[in-house]
Length: 303
Length: 301
Ligand SMILES: Nc1ncnc2c1ncn2[C@@H]1O[C@H](COP(=O)(O)OP(=O)(O)OP(=O)(O)O)[C@@H](O)[C@H]1O
Ligand SMILES: [Mg+2]
Image (tube, rainbow over all chains, first blue to last red; front, top):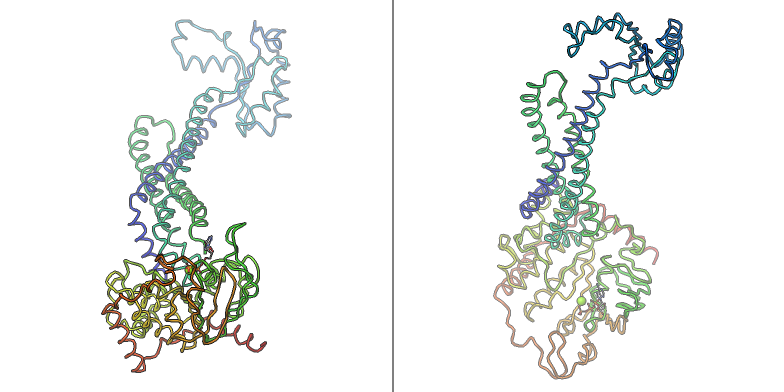
């Protein structure tokens, strides 16, 4: 009975303020689409990082002949220097490095020849042009700094190189664009909140007669305010549902049907990921609506 | 039932107090007229009883509860035990007569079956049988006020407050409304009515509390309105809307009651004669609490 009555009030209110309600729906739709897009982009970045960082290694290049680095003053790295480096890796970096692989000049030349059987840019290179190195897989790719600190500057080590550095510009760009999306989302969420506040206020003012009588005959504060709260929450929720549908369609048609066809060598976000963030978006919509109602109703329907 | 102890109310800092050190005690079941010039504090008095306002000083007790200490979430409970009617009726224009009265029960969460039986009863009791489906604009002023009274009374409050309920009505219609309020009072409900209407006060011979610029200047049982020129402001021989000056014919002579009001009054009288009972008292938390509080106060006294 009470529920039916309150729902009746809610729908009457929604109908009376139809234009405002539509604008609330649209603004929450757009803002939550941005939030969702940022979240999906972040998920995509995580997937790429997961994929690629497993493949990349830290290379510890050993001094070749004629290097100008100060640690290579003694010419090509000696057997002794190499075994010192190897020992250091197995003792000091034991918990950071998961696998160690020594690539000798021969190995390097073999790999090179396999990749460029006809020589590199017209020059036929020999085994002597290759450089020996340790290839380290790190347990945690983020620990690169530790490896660098321990091994750089040792005699016989020319340079420590993190292959991840190759991907950094890409990830930087992706991270920045997801930050931009988040920034836009925040601005739009503020707009949504303000719009919900205005809508509820309008609704409260247009129903002042009713609420006045409700308070007069002893309706509880919650009973007076609930229809307004539900009104705001319902409009915001509708916007969130639209955002989820929009993101789902975008992932389905843009990513899965199109991007994944042409760029099939990386893992992509899926519609399942959209469903994962759906509760987040719905929750955010309800939270924004709740905060807005709390701000407004406190002032307009006080007992 | 209602007790003011040295109550003062100042709306804005520095303004003249709307009520100034008012002490008054209204017994359970009493009928009290609150008279005084415009701005003397009558509406303020009623709003304090409803706790729409809080006193600046002193204490207000209603049914034994100290309203100055009542926590906000208990205010709805207090108001369920008080009915209130106004000069301008305050009906919802897009609801029917039935819906207007039912609304008061719906919003306090009364079950549907209770509403379905109680609302027709109270409508018959106030003389509006057969007009359930009309909207307020299809009713005369007197009938609209009956709807408002039905809405105030449908939850069987212990107290009925009326702020110039006859202010917009002609004399005959006003008399009908007064008979209705009197019947409500005879069911045991305490009635406090603010009014400017000297004829009504003189006719009813009930307790009169007169306010003047926020102070009680008279409190008499079975009293008359008092000398008109003492209560109304001195405005000279010019007709000012609701404060006629001395020597100006009273506004009410030429007004004739509308047929609907006469019919409603007759129907109400007939219902009363047939022995139609007022709607039963709903025993719920609030009223039980209120009667309990009353009983304990009575024992104290
Ligand atoms: N909400 C308010 N804010 C500020 N001042 C108010 C407010 N309500 C009433 N007043 C002032 O308090 C005084 C008493 O007003 P009140 O309405 O109680 O008088 P009243 O006796 O009901 O008058 P009337 O017969 O015209 O209805 C007046 O001076 C009025 O201006
Ligand atoms: Mg008044």
